[in-house]
Image 1 (spheres, rainbow over the protein chains, first blue to last red):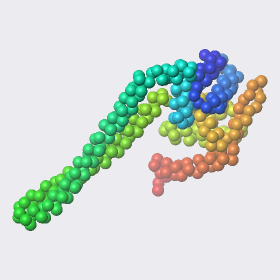
Image 2: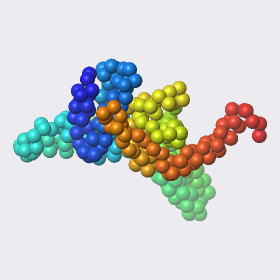
Image 3: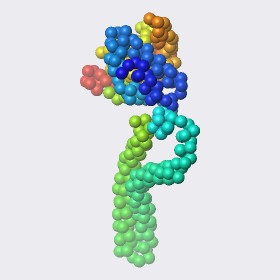
Image 4: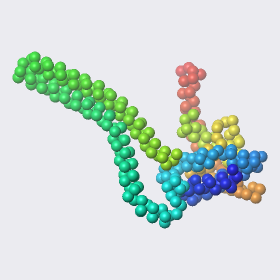
Length: 198
Length: 104
């Protein structure tokens, strides 16, 4: 690929970044290709030494905020005809089609998060139920012991201790599950960002 | 090497090159050859970040009928090298201990 082609494709790829950023990076790569050529490489070799356009674009975008990268990705033409008026007309005409699709996608993401968090949530519920139920059972054991006799009292105390034990186990499980699911949702979030950054 | 960690090292290496003399992208990569793995493409975002943090300044010089951008270290850049050396001096003490080089 020639230097000219490389710069044209790169400019196209960076589309939505602020104009100053695009100019700045094109200046850098143009000047670097010249330096590589001066060091004895052919133009083709110089361009190849920089890596693929994808790698170069990713390097440039790597420290840009997600907002700008998304703009670049939209303007790059993945979701655009290149004609603003036509884009708006299509956007309006396509509303009955894309709006339900977008809504579905959002609901799906929401459900995915909900589903992921249901497991640790339920475990916490079991833990809380065990702890409170157990404590209540111990209180009942005292009252029951006085009213109905020691046998009922002991039975209720035993049930209470068992429930507390169960609650403790569930609590430990819930703690680790929560920690694990925090990383899982972080991965989900990164996956969503990956749709735009690639 | 961890990406964040490596980024910090490349930044410090680039500042060190510029501490020697003002320099341009291609030559910085050449100077760092065999020291740390960086090429012309991965160098660009590093230079940008350093510029945004005001660790270096850019000026252009005419060279063979075209403009070449030179990077020049600033006082802030020099201060970052000092910080880097101080931080890693502390890390190296722990490193020596972990690797068994120095018995505590």
